[in-house]
Amino acid sequence: MSVVLPLAVTWVSGAALVFLDGRRTWVTVLAMLALAGNLVTLMPLLDAPVAQVLAGGWPEGLGIRLTSDPLGVMFALMAGLVLLGALAFEFARGISWPRLPAVIVLLACGLDGLFLTADAFNFYVFFEITMLSSLALTAYGPDRARFREALLFAFVNAVGSVFFLGSVAALYRMTGTLDMQGIERALAGAPVGTALPVAALLLVAFALKLGIVPFHFWVPGVYVGATTGIAAVLGGAVSSVGTYGLLRFGAGLLPQDVALAREALQALGGVSVLYGALLALGRTRPAAVLAYTAVSQAGYVLVALSVGGPAGYAAAALVGVVNALDKGLLFLAAGLPGRVGRVSVLLGALSAAGLPPGVGFFSKYALLRAAGTAEAWWVVLLVVAGGGLGLSAMIRLHQACAWDTRRRAPVTRGPLARLVVAALAAATVALAVWPEPLLVWGERVGMRLGAP
Amino acid sequence: MILLSSAAVASLFGAGIALLLRRSLVAMIVGASLVSNAAFVFLVAAGGHLGHAPIAPVVGDPNDPLGQALALTGLVINLGTTAVLVALVNGVWATDRTLDLDDVARAARREDDAREDPA
Image 1 (cartoon, rainbow over the protein chains, first blue to last red):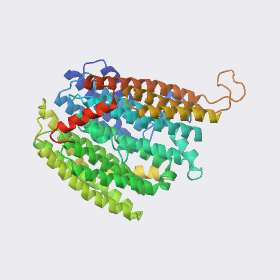
Image 2: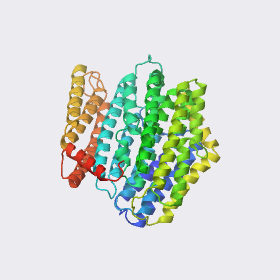
Image 3: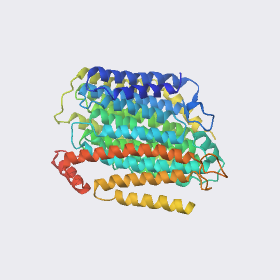
Image 4: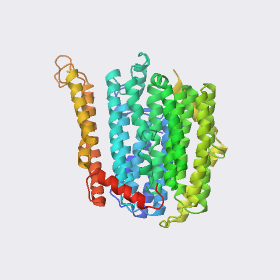
């Protein structure tokens, strides 16, 4: 199955959907079919040997490479799943903007391209497509005040994109190629610290996307007040761009600089973990609690990256993927009143806190074991402390959802919304009961990234 | 030549950031655009400074045209981003009837305080 297929499916259907009225049922059904097709074309790529396609038939080294790297494919799958669930949930709520299904499918296209490309500038192009689609989504909703938050989000993202573009230009100047493998090979023999300014710029760009302290200031404003489905999209799918970028560009291209900045990454990540969890405890609105726990969970990715080596990178990838699934589930479940919503929030909260029967238990355990093997005792202490604080924040979340007395618009297609949330919750429990495929994938990714 | 292009990138970036820090939303849009343009000049400069334009027939050592191609792509993307920014500012205008960032922040704070449970 070709690597181009997921991109083609979402691109063509997204472009066609722009001209259709998304408030009609059949248009949304078409969009959901397109997203399901996206998932179906991505799944065979996961187990198959790594394939690559050179766009336009250009020779190796000149052409843009698309590759079905396991890291990229799993992130694309997870993001696609969250997008499908979010669109179904918004459909159950009632869509008020004709372009919503089209923009969500185009966002899926941008995310697919971003996760499947092996060319640095092509990554920038799909990064921008993703950003523009998510900006349009942030301004969606009945609350007129959405434009303020969307504007803040827009400026922050614009500056982040410029930093990323600057670092791509610097990498091209230094290595003479835009191909990620070519850059990795060219930088491998360079003296330590050559690409340090570039690494710093990339860290800022992806930390802005992920919401790590001190680049977290936009997170609460954007998530609180966003409609449930959009918050799930932003928290589950769009933020995983930051995790993937840190892994691909940090661990993949610039491992020497990651090792050099080990203490700084641990400090930044640690502050995020503790700050996010502490502030989440003081909030009463479910979306606000979730926004701050998103900041907290983002810190774990940085901490796992700082541990380094195949085990650390595997843990970082696992934490990132599980976090995307958790956030998607939690944002959707927090917006669903009723018993299904409460139980799903509880399951998602357990996973986010790192306890069984949540799949988050395995990702946090992988991080603990990697830190223990590398004898990074501060990291072990941080994960345990962060886990305790995170558990308190999650209990707070459950309270906030149960005591949420705001009058909300009734969900028009209640059974569909309940089905979506229950399916996502079942997925996390299923992964927790049978974590083998996920853990094997994590090891594979760790080996590929950590191989010298 | 390297000094000249570095000075260009630096002054564009500085001017853009200075505009981004102002109160007027329209100034902020122009600032974001300038900051992006600084990155594009950097991209073109990444193509080298040997001096000869990469246009056929090639005479001497030409600059690398790839930087210019990337800058063109970036300019088109920047057009889209600026369009979205202008649309969002238009939305803020429709909601708050002001283009002043301080007024927008004050309105947001007022709404936040009026809510029973602040975020």
